Image (cartoon, rainbow, N blue to C red; front, side, top):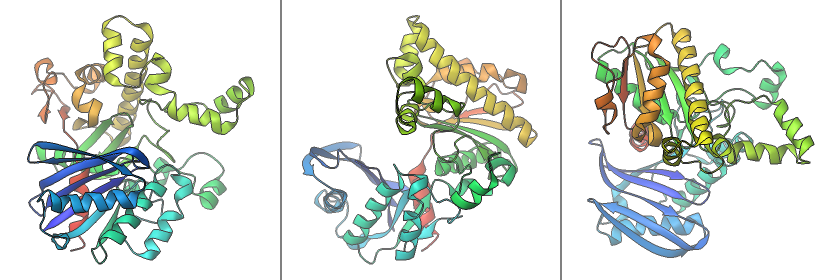
Length: 390
């Protein structure tokens, strides 16, 4: 049975076609620069990369090109082979505690949450609508970033703000990267053979978040109402005193919205280093003695360590720490310095294993807390969710 997993952004469309339930990837790819004359459709089939350049002015065109490209490249013989489509949706709010079969009513409910994710949910809905038109009658499932965190309790997700803000406007912590945190924490429990394990997942990419998982359930996470909360990221500030918005808007004659935009797009690695949001550039800068690059690295590591320590106390212990996503999987310097910072918890780094890539344990065998690199797989989690509705 072939299941398509989709992640639609404002100008991109990522996709993977799985043979289920074996979870074999048949094809993966991305449509880039949707809305432009120089758009590209990229397929990865049997290890071969195929790039096609087209004018793709909207998501409907992008979807049509993708699904008919599957036939053109002999991936499938007909569209009838696609038995389900899973769509990543960033924000499910309190309306969706689990993945949902997409109906007109579900689409209306997702749209009602657009204020909570104005950059993501509208784009996700655009992809959903395009696929519904292209594949009428094929079951579509919405898989939400937030649902894994629906197990958090009020002490973890509420802000100490007027309670009416929560009741009237949904102001609370929702958390994101849920499918990644779920996949990695489940894999960690398998690796240590412990179903009631206490696991911390560090999903470190250009966007980054940590999650405390106790016995398979998310009990706390670093991102909040939006992905801006938490640790510093590629271009996001992470936690910051809200009074900064008033101060900077006054000093630089900017609106709150303009300052907020800088906290989202010009802060983090980019803001501190002054030259890049890319972890590889930051590490290179550190190695050549660049002060601000070193500072960007140290600030992020310190904040990651802060969260790990907090989650350790909140869960009453820790069995495994997992690094995943682009930086978590590929930056040994980050892993080294984070583990150094939490050495007091009983974790020792295996320097040799830490320099390698791929799934592996990077702590010493006698470490009280085990540390792992576990490559994430959000797409397969989406496909698994679709299978629940078959």
